[in-house]
Image 1 (cartoon, one colour):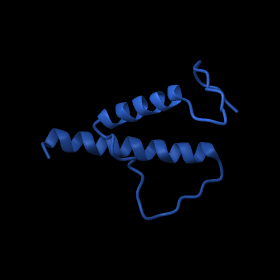
Image 2 (cartoon, rainbow, N blue to C red):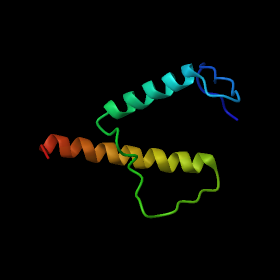
Image 3 (cartoon, rainbow, N blue to C red):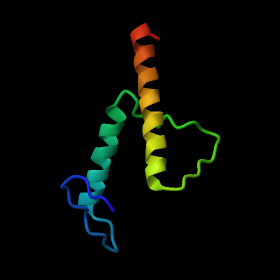
Length: 79
């Protein structure tokens, strides 16, 4: 497993904590503020199967890059 970044994962407990609920709500609010906050850009209606997590991550990243690029082009055209 690769470790990226320095943020510590919260220790799982048997009960949800208010701190984690607040942290999740803040993250959700920030994601919704993005121009593309309401979509993942992954085409719907298909089942995607991957041999590795790296392959799945590459697919997700590629969909995101293409979707954001399309969004930018349409914003420049004023659509």
